[in-house]
Amino acid sequence: MTSTTFRIGQRVRTTVDAPAAWPGAFSAPAGTPGTITDLHDKWDSYGVLLDGDPDNLPASFRADELAPLNL
Image (cartoon, rainbow, N blue to C red; front, side):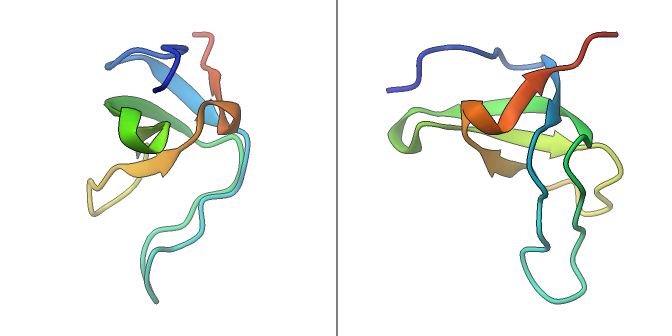
Protein backbone atom coordinates (compact mmCIF):
# COMPACT_ATOMS: atom_id res chain seq x y z
CA MET A 1 0.00 0.00 0.00
CA THR A 2 1.26 3.47 -0.90
CA SER A 3 2.40 5.64 1.96
CA THR A 4 0.63 8.85 1.08
CA THR A 5 3.45 11.10 -0.01
CA PHE A 6 1.23 13.00 -2.42
CA ARG A 7 -2.48 13.83 -2.49
CA ILE A 8 -5.02 14.09 -5.28
CA GLY A 9 -4.91 17.55 -6.84
CA GLN A 10 -1.32 18.20 -5.74
CA ARG A 11 1.04 19.72 -8.31
CA VAL A 12 4.21 17.71 -8.89
CA ARG A 13 7.06 17.39 -11.37
CA THR A 14 8.52 14.20 -12.76
CA THR A 15 12.07 13.14 -11.92
CA VAL A 16 12.21 10.66 -14.83
CA ASP A 17 11.36 10.81 -18.52
CA ALA A 18 7.84 9.74 -19.49
CA PRO A 19 8.10 7.82 -22.76
CA ALA A 20 5.24 7.65 -25.24
CA ALA A 21 2.77 4.85 -24.46
CA TRP A 22 2.31 4.11 -28.19
CA PRO A 23 3.85 5.38 -31.43
CA GLY A 24 3.04 9.05 -31.92
CA ALA A 25 1.72 9.50 -28.37
CA PHE A 26 2.77 12.25 -25.96
CA SER A 27 6.14 11.90 -24.24
CA ALA A 28 7.70 14.22 -21.69
CA PRO A 29 11.17 14.81 -20.26
CA ALA A 30 12.05 14.64 -16.58
CA GLY A 31 10.99 17.85 -14.87
CA THR A 32 7.59 18.03 -16.57
CA PRO A 33 4.91 19.40 -14.23
CA GLY A 34 1.58 17.70 -13.68
CA THR A 35 -1.27 17.08 -11.26
CA ILE A 36 -1.94 13.97 -9.17
CA THR A 37 -5.29 12.54 -10.34
CA ASP A 38 -5.49 9.28 -8.42
CA LEU A 39 -3.70 6.83 -6.14
CA HIS A 40 -3.00 3.25 -7.19
CA ASP A 41 -2.45 1.46 -3.90
CA LYS A 42 -2.43 -1.93 -5.59
CA TRP A 43 0.54 -0.91 -7.77
CA ASP A 44 2.11 1.50 -5.27
CA SER A 45 1.89 4.36 -7.76
CA TYR A 46 0.13 7.61 -8.63
CA GLY A 47 -1.81 8.71 -11.68
CA VAL A 48 -0.44 12.04 -12.93
CA LEU A 49 -1.92 14.18 -15.68
CA LEU A 50 1.14 15.81 -17.22
CA ASP A 51 0.87 19.38 -18.43
CA GLY A 52 0.62 19.53 -22.20
CA ASP A 53 -0.68 15.98 -22.71
CA PRO A 54 -3.20 16.39 -25.55
CA ASP A 55 -4.86 13.06 -24.72
CA ASN A 56 -5.60 14.05 -21.09
CA LEU A 57 -4.63 10.56 -19.94
CA PRO A 58 -2.86 10.21 -16.59
CA ALA A 59 0.49 8.45 -16.59
CA SER A 60 1.54 6.16 -13.74
CA PHE A 61 4.53 7.07 -11.55
CA ARG A 62 5.98 5.72 -8.30
CA ALA A 63 6.51 8.19 -5.46
CA ASP A 64 10.28 8.17 -6.05
CA GLU A 65 9.66 9.34 -9.64
CA LEU A 66 7.88 12.52 -8.50
CA ALA A 67 8.73 15.64 -6.53
CA PRO A 68 6.47 18.38 -5.16
CA LEU A 69 6.15 21.38 -7.46
CA ASN A 70 6.89 24.44 -5.41
CA LEU A 71 4.87 27.29 -6.86
